[in-house]
Image (cartoon, rainbow, N blue to C red):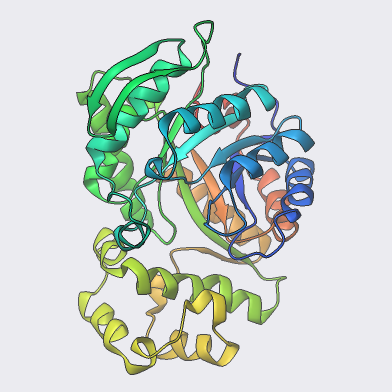
Length: 365
């Protein structure tokens, strides 16, 4: 099944059901609108509540014709490899080749609480190898490896499925692994342009060392996009609240990746307002809470690693991501409705050379 190549702006993607939701059916209207305004792909971020990756991918595939679809991300330990492989082949065929399976490391503490093994790079590489063998019609017999012990796995000997694998990565080891084994890489939100350029080099250098064509790995930047037409409360939640929530969860990783001030991060982490807060800032933060964070604890430099301002200014930030080495850009944290003016502005700036990208977010050609 050949990659679909009919997306209007294949270099752009949005998120389906961005952030928290109680209504997963909303992804149907979002997918239709995303395709209508010309987004190339919709990324579907899985959560263990009402955001199952397979269900969402099936819904999006069923109501669109051109839109690329990616899980961004699921964790290989949460499903048996045969179940994950089946989810992917089902979504692949339902979408007629528009689907990419996205995998990430996840959070060690969450897996500890769930009674699942913590994810390692070796496990991910082994799991990807199993999926690809199954998709190519092979049987996996007597497998003993980092991803587990499997006496016999098989889907269909007639299979010859071209399903790309995306990896979410931020640390150098994950970036190097992605360059070695993945078809595409999805980076993190709130990266400076300098950090983005460095990560692109790490991925491509790793691919080259592995004997791969470095340009064959599709690299997605993830750009927090907050255009002026949204209200102040939503702007604060999507910008200040989202960054603060990342810093609550794994701030040290993000701060080091960007080369940000460690002392400023220590002040944030140890501030009584942060240590005593009763949840994620992007979920329960009030306008006053988020204003306090922005004024006292989050340097403007950190918040500027995003796309803000007019639609034209946001579109210019898309070009900055491409200039830093990314192949494509996920416009993060905004609904397709909120992204419409940004996409319209981007249409006036973009290079026609980008038309050559496939709609499937995991392929470069």
